[in-house]
Structure formats: structure tokens, C-alpha cells
Image 1: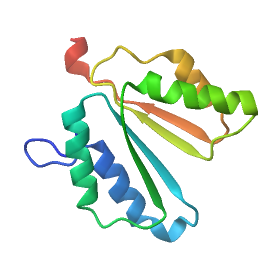
Image 2: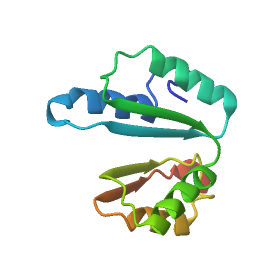
Image 3: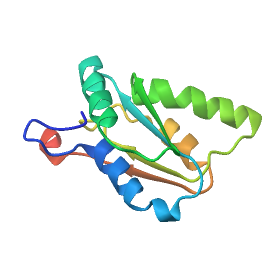
Amino acid sequence: PGRYEEGEPGSPLIALETAARHLHRITEAVEFWFIERDEERLAHLVREIEALNLPKNFEISPLLGEFDAVVRPKLEAAARTGEQFGPTFAFIDPFGFSKIPMTTVKLLLKNRSCEIFVNIMVEPIN
């Protein structure tokens, strides 16, 4: 959501701020896709991102939708043309433990230099 009720930053802000701290190592454009299924949370995230002073080579795409519905078509199109994504770190944070299609994860991992981190919160499983 960008920032939680107590003021702590969410994973999108942490990712942006961490990448910005390592700007001396980044020479190319860095693309960020932040996919959120809730329109209000996406709007909140956009406001939080706009308040940051980010480098010009950061390309930020806040996207409304479900992870699979947004990512899978892009991956399938790239696979058809033989296009490879650049080095990728995919942080999948589903707010639960369902709706993570492993076929989409498999498509992501077919790209070289791709790493995936799936955040699964323990409380909903318990």
C-alpha cells in the first residue's frame, strides 16, 4: 500500500529507496512494476511515490490488477518473440498464500538473471 497505518514503508517504497541508495552502481534504466488489485491502495501508493525524490533513470509503472493477469501476457509475448527480460528481481507479495500461479512464476524464471522472492505471511496460513 505504500505506507502502512503506523507510518512504516511498504515493500514498494523500500525497494525504491534501496535502489536509490545504490545508484552509484546503476548505469541503466531500472524498471519497477508495482501491481495492486485495490484501486484505493494503488492511488495511495502513487501519492507516496510522487512524494519521493527519485533518480531520472527509474521507470515506475503502478499497475491496477492481479499479478497473473498483468504479468503473464507480458511474459507470453516476450516468449513468443524470444525477448529476454533484463536482470529481474520479482518480489511477489500476495497478501495471503493463494493466487500465485506457478506457471507464471515458471515463465519468469525462464529469463536469465531472474530471481523471485515470494512473501508468504504465516498468520493467514495458521
